[in-house]
Image (cartoon, rainbow, N blue to C red; front, side, top):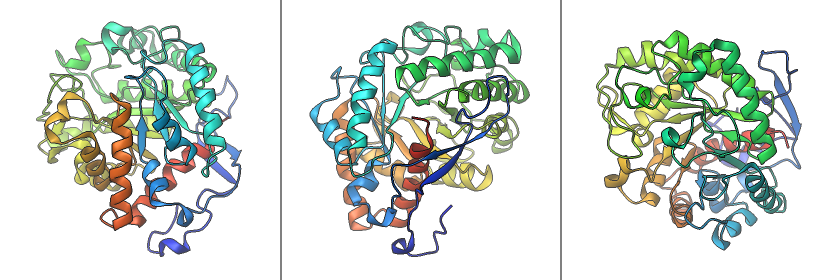
Length: 384
């Protein structure tokens, strides 16, 4: 990690010629232990040389679900090295073959850009069918069973689900899965009703999320634990409404956050923040809260990987500002990546807003570089 006490101009070669990234699929298929993968980057990158627009772009996950294909604005951002990630949905990529065509096309643009490292191509391939997960997955790729159904088969079944998901996503050109769910389900809570939790105890959820991460990592697909600091007690899905989780800070830390630790140890490289509000920690939704995104996740929990928001265009955040304003607020809160998951134009607007914030110093460049370091290390280390 870079010493942020140094001046930004002294931060050289942040993404070096080789980067070790945990659990990226370098181990044998019969070895469940996380392994480090060393991958050569096309060339060394110096963060101090990146423009405000390129730094801003490392913070964004763009969609094109409303346009079916990547439009000229998204392509332009990628060609300029001003976009770090995209997210696929069923509407734009219903099949493995279609996702592969999109991924190959976008990766070709990224390779020719001033930031010539693999684009993060993400999807929410969580498990279950469209009735529980919505239009967020490849229809012809596993896992087809929900987390709850997988859990009934124990560690071996969940690990096998991770292996099959990882292999299918690799064929699709997807390198980041926004799964597994590491939330401890409570009776009658939204995730429990949807079958999306592995269980009702931190020990069970932690053990099974770690198994999925290990399995998926064998194919070089990065895993994302969600939804920090824990969404298993929410009565409503934040895609559709505001959720307030009234657990004490002690319970959140002892139960809900504890379930994330085994998955991190197993090699999960990303953690997604919940869109819910946790009054015991902060009156703001988690992705807009520096107390949670930095104080809780980084400083207290100790996570050193890439943090990512849930969809900032979800209904739960609609009253909090425009997507561009929310992306700026999430960056100020210290979140590395912001998902704009409904309209392609939202990422374009957010990019312009973040670029202004960095260029004017309202968002400190040192913080922008620190986030870009984590994102670019992930991008560089992913198996190609």
